[in-house]
Image (cartoon, rainbow, N blue to C red; front, side, top):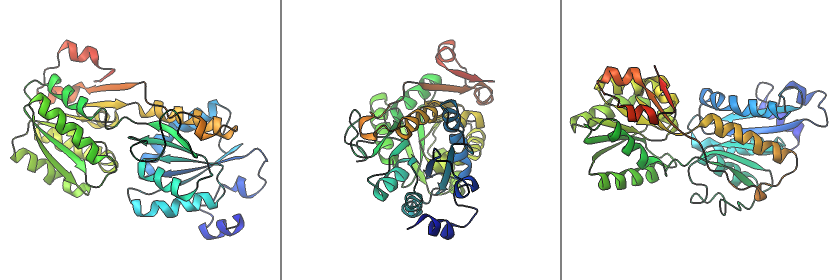
Length: 326
């Protein structure tokens, strides 16, 4: 499809910025962003990405144009969105999430793709290996699965009274099964009984926690998930009302009122993605850029929530925290 035809199909509101269609400098770089998240969550994640690009000399509206597609959790539209970005002649694609990365890979074997927030790119079949990705993809792994068991360990270390733990997950999310396997294995080793509940929408959150409480759980693990992250405020309020000390993947959860989070720094991850994108826009080949694994894991505690729940935080636990939210 020719570019003029592509713009006509998409319409002015969703096409490349006016700068691109008018007098586009020869040095203008065009990045397509394909996200499996909502526009709001994608915008949050893109802040450090765009900051990183600015620091490296790529400034939107001057020598950079960014075209976005946000699936909002509807994985069925990702293939179409990926094709739109490829047909629009994006110089490179930033793919956010495993499903989005797979859709981008299926759409093109030529356009460079930098992926972010992928739990296990090798097991997912996205790259050949961490050291030698091969093909047109590289990016940053999230270690979502690897850290799943550690969250259970931290939860019972923080509150030794926790004996039965509820685990809430998003049904059908790309890494849900792998995360649950790791948590169940850890539960067996630690002698912790688990109550697993999956949800398909925000309207099911109350019922899910009620089902756990009926099983007399006294702790909660929130697995990595688009749905749960986008509804973190609601879930945090439900957990607090139920009196459940809880731990999640992203720092945005304790910022929203959940007791704790333990996971990769998304801000660092997306800023590192900017460095990868810079190298690719300057001519580097994705196949020659090893997949980067996070070197910074954040343990964040909301001390106000802990006090409201009556959880006595030991000096040892507080000393291990990277950040304490008052």
